[in-house]
Image 1 (cartoon, rainbow, N blue to C red):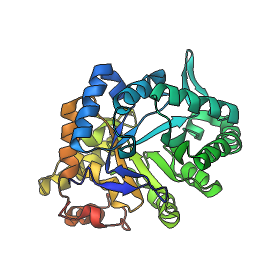
Image 2 (cartoon, one colour; image 1 turned 180 degrees about the vertical axis):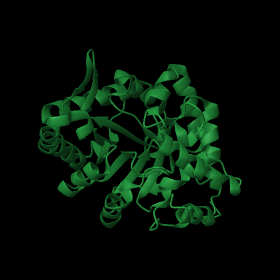
Image 3 (spheres, rainbow, N blue to C red; image 1 turned 135 degrees about the horizontal axis):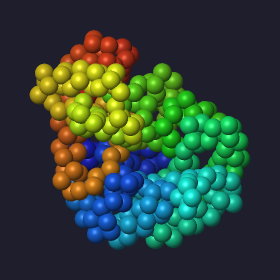
Image 4 (cartoon, rainbow, N blue to C red; image 1 turned 90 degrees about the vertical axis):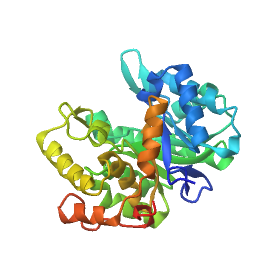
Length: 326
């Protein structure tokens, strides 16, 4: 079994996810219905067993396409996650974390997926960057509305686990301190270029056996392409300081004959709380490339060199996932 297809536990839920997860966001939605089926078939044949989507993605079409491709598979062999609370509207995104909306969203997702249960449901994108002055209201709405509904559904067995999905580690920690969530999906905050999660969120997750799924491991571009002209970082052109840091990271990787993208995929899994790294795949070739990248052994000396250069935190955990065996 390759490293990418190894299974990792989702906290204390009994669920396990492959180290490489398949994201069902804009990239996979852009592949078209048959393209999604072909990519998922290739992912399945390669041994991947974690698939992530959301009601938001392509206005529900991502759920339909993943559901159509997955529901003929043995139900106990894969883990599927989706998200509630943020939805596509005719005039922009709609946010609703109320109990009634959550109930309705789960029923709608089950209908689109064509499944009788959902393994993981994430409360989606409750962050100040999106909600501004309404953030505290949205946070309270999620905790008083969505959370009790999802907790009840977990107890009933309609869903297997409850988590939160967002890109701000401090807000993720606040959610986890408020209630008994099983996991969180973090899009940023724990990449080769972003380390904020290591200070408080990841230690909390380790202490409470809360699994972390790390999305956007390439920081939306630059860690896959390298610091080339037009490289993207956090959905925008990469600023000079990010370009410089990426160049330094790439130079250290080059000394070990390793692509920067391989280190970017493996880095989030250094922390013992990280269960899976989730990437989008627009083509089978891209999927196969990411499988090869994640399976490349990364010597601990590479991480130590990055720490010594001040590019990674001094307290970086160097566990088994960083060994030369891969």
